[in-house]
Length: 531
Image 1: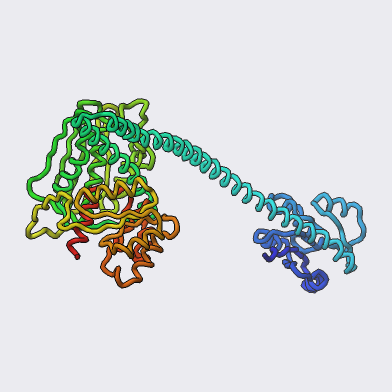
Image 2: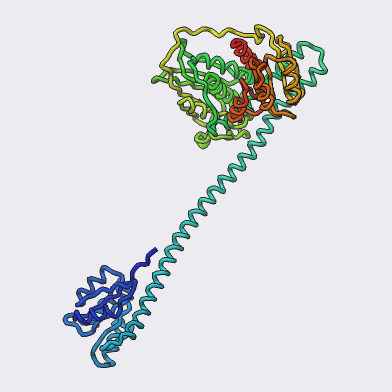
């Protein structure tokens, strides 16, 4: 970075004297300002910062002493060092007047060049040092300001990290609680089934275990959905659906929780179909999550209302309850991940604090908005979803045919899973709906059995000993006798990258454990319809 030039002021009424001084003082980094009168000198002093003034004493009009006194009278020029140049005799009185006017030295004419250069170099170097000091002070001030900013930011981030750590600890504790809740009755139910001979009791216990398992799967799916959406890895499977059918599906899913709280659910839905271009599963999930939230945060015997209203080429779906409400402070954060109303002051039934965050993200993916409103504690709340209506409407909407999961013709399955209970229960389920099942527990055995029985469908776990599921699929797919075999990857790995890797290995389908009986039956129907 180039240094700022140093300015010397030369004042003499004779042009030849100024030219002589300029010749003697010329050096790199020095700019010589020349004036032939006091008035010209004062004008230059208003424009430039001067490191040294060399003033001739004898000048017409304003002499050197008068100019020096004027310089001393202003703050801008009062500290400029002055050297007087004079051809007069060494008069003590004149020297005293000069020093009184602010002179630091006198140089008598004729001027000795070395003396002049030596004395002026001191002021040149001194000014350079002052420049360096000022530059360092400026840098220190900037550095101090930046340090203050960084300190403030670090404190802010520290507070955020402490808050995140607190919320993480709360989340992990809540997660452990929420996972143990369904696991406890499932384990107790297994013990009851082993001990009880009462068929009615066994049926009730099985239904209870199925509900608890569904709840457990839902918790895990919600966590995975939040992760996928945050990473931009979730894809909507859009289709033309009616708002009414999505509401019916959501109510069916949420009905057990609503009934458990002895709540009254009121539906206000138009008779004429309102059509959306949306993912039917996700829209049902959005509405169901809001209904579940209302049921959880409403005291027993509460009122829940679900309405749908067409407005401005869109539909507003609102879930209103007369529950515990939301404080004004909590409203802006209610959709933040892992945020919950303080359960110490509520009668909520727990949760991971991800339901509303997931709903907001899913609504946004559909091009909609989600708003929360509440008049405060114990005054209920309303969550309103706004979604765009579709321009298209089906010419004819056929009612979905109910399926019982039994295939039109039995299939020959080879189930491969190193988790023996998982393999055995999958085999029993398939046999109960009429299929033939063979089981293997490692990759090498799977290849050998497949070559022996030539299955219609291979249900393959990925993390197998010997050969992975990918390797088993690749080896068998390379053989012509397996060109009609359907390969299904059944695994706990459900990220988009896992699905891609499965399809790249040759799998025809990818399902994530645990898959429900209804979903698996639908998949088998699709497979059989293509055969």
